[in-house]
Amino acid sequence: MSMGAYDEDEHERRAEKARVDADFDDEREEYRGEVTFSGDDDTEALLDQFHELK
Image (cartoon, rainbow, N blue to C red; front, top):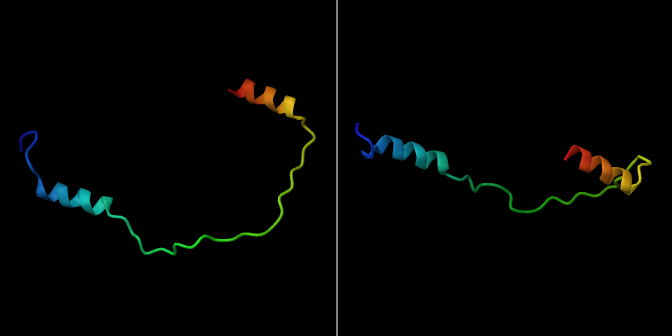
Protein backbone atom coordinates (compact mmCIF):
# COMPACT_ATOMS: atom_id res chain seq x y z
CA MET A 1 0.00 0.00 0.00
CA SER A 2 1.39 3.35 -0.95
CA MET A 3 1.46 6.48 1.17
CA GLY A 4 -1.91 8.20 1.20
CA ALA A 5 -3.83 5.11 0.07
CA TYR A 6 -7.26 4.72 1.69
CA ASP A 7 -7.40 1.93 4.24
CA GLU A 8 -11.00 1.15 5.22
CA ASP A 9 -10.00 -1.11 8.13
CA GLU A 10 -7.81 1.61 9.60
CA HIS A 11 -10.59 4.16 9.15
CA GLU A 12 -13.06 1.91 11.01
CA ARG A 13 -10.53 1.21 13.78
CA ARG A 14 -9.96 4.92 14.34
CA ALA A 15 -13.69 5.68 14.26
CA GLU A 16 -14.32 3.01 16.91
CA LYS A 17 -11.46 4.34 19.03
CA ALA A 18 -12.86 7.89 18.87
CA ARG A 19 -16.41 6.87 19.80
CA VAL A 20 -17.61 8.49 23.03
CA ASP A 21 -19.74 6.63 25.55
CA ALA A 22 -22.51 9.04 26.55
CA ASP A 23 -24.28 6.59 28.87
CA PHE A 24 -23.31 8.20 32.13
CA ASP A 25 -25.13 10.08 34.85
CA ASP A 26 -25.00 13.76 33.99
CA GLU A 27 -25.75 14.96 37.51
CA ARG A 28 -23.02 16.36 39.74
CA GLU A 29 -22.16 14.69 43.00
CA GLU A 30 -22.60 16.81 46.09
CA TYR A 31 -20.03 16.31 48.81
CA ARG A 32 -20.28 17.71 52.30
CA GLY A 33 -17.52 17.82 54.86
CA GLU A 34 -14.67 19.81 56.27
CA VAL A 35 -11.14 20.50 55.13
CA THR A 36 -8.39 21.17 57.61
CA PHE A 37 -4.81 22.14 57.03
CA SER A 38 -1.95 21.41 59.34
CA GLY A 39 1.24 23.34 59.10
CA ASP A 40 2.75 26.46 60.53
CA ASP A 41 4.48 27.73 57.38
CA ASP A 42 3.69 31.30 56.55
CA THR A 43 2.86 32.48 53.05
CA GLU A 44 6.30 33.96 52.33
CA ALA A 45 8.08 30.73 53.27
CA LEU A 46 5.78 28.74 51.02
CA LEU A 47 6.30 31.16 48.13
CA ASP A 48 10.07 30.97 48.61
CA GLN A 49 9.91 27.17 48.54
CA PHE A 50 7.73 27.31 45.41
CA HIS A 51 10.24 29.57 43.64
CA GLU A 52 13.09 27.25 44.60
CA LEU A 53 11.27 24.27 43.14
CA LYS A 54 10.38 26.18 40.02
